[in-house]
Length: 231
Image (tube, rainbow, N blue to C red; front, side, top):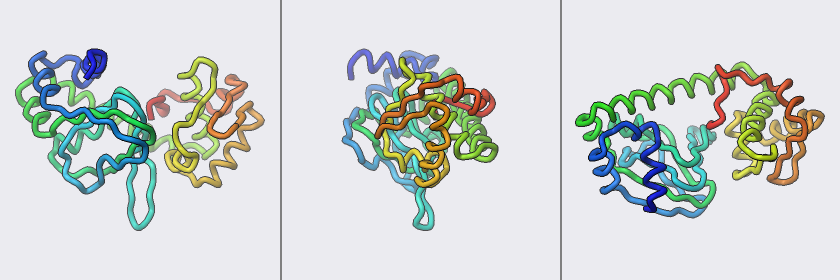
């Protein structure tokens, strides 16, 4: 790893406060790998062997049942997945695959559990990370249950647009994947984009231009008790 990679991982909330020797021990036995687009990283119901840290690229978390599949979230640099399964030494409840070329650091699960027992500060950071994950799930449930498909899309676009310099959203995933992430069919996503056209949302392939952020904000009514730009 490059020094910048190590610094970025060290600055994650999960590792920020742990003892230097704890962090060094975990990094020393970790594996850094590059993956092309479309690689299945983990499968639900498999044992949780590693804690994954996304350093570059984009990862899709998804689940399946009864022949159906749904996107649950996207994991962007620099962040981890899936901590709960690693700590409980149980199977993954989600699958993960790369949406774009990615660099992933894999930390052995047993080492993470051992470090938690030996380093109180690391244990407290883990509690904080789990609490953040729980609150994110509650926010997403509220987003799905309290908003129409157009409102969910508008809030997602607004959050992504605010992360860019010019209000332009460049989709790193297929529109069908975005539709699944937002809890709708591809057809419903198309209708939602049509609804937002009058609010200055212009779709040009995978480029989405937000020409009237004020109108989009008035329509979407972002709520800090619901919205999280990282999901």
